[in-house]
Length: 252
Image 1 (cartoon, rainbow, N blue to C red):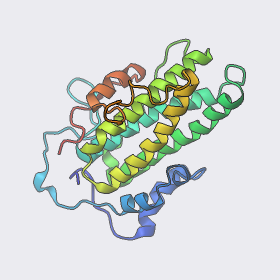
Image 2 (cartoon, rainbow, N blue to C red; image 1 turned 90 degrees about the vertical axis):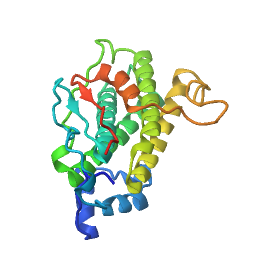
Image 3 (cartoon, rainbow, N blue to C red; image 1 turned 60 degrees about the horizontal axis):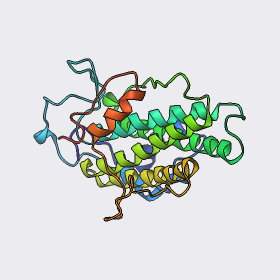
């Protein structure tokens, strides 16, 4: 496990409380089905001391010489990376859900109302987990940015939602191998399955039958697309005001 994660005690009740406090309105677990995985996450601690620490790596939320915000290294970097993407998705969906009915109607409107809750829960879950395990390195709140016409038409909203969901699934698929703590990998796997459901639904709204198109699922391998943090951040950066540095994600 990353040496950036600080060891906690062994009292289950005291561990669990920080994860639930920020998301009282709806439990993350009713969507991710993550009760067992989260129990492991809550019990996760640092398995060794600082013998492998690498002081030269930037800490999460620190500002680099180029003025970018570092996502950090080791598992902290991976979690902050996921948190950054979930912040972006949560903000986008909250703005869509707040639109008056008209641009979106019927089942489309209902879908965005529900998914806005999912993404807010994912965002709050990562913030709580990082705050608990590496409180000094939790990524600050980001400032999303959009085109002036982003929320004016159904077509624009659906295409941006599809881009975000496809990017999110590919990001989780590519980052899983960077995690050193099994419990974190369990949680990431359960969240990406929810994101994949979103991606499939949105893709069918944009172009029916495209939920498993060849540009997302390798037709020879039957596997979903995976992207590296560098590839994902290159795309995501266009929607985030702050400059992010993900060069140390997953590095110990």
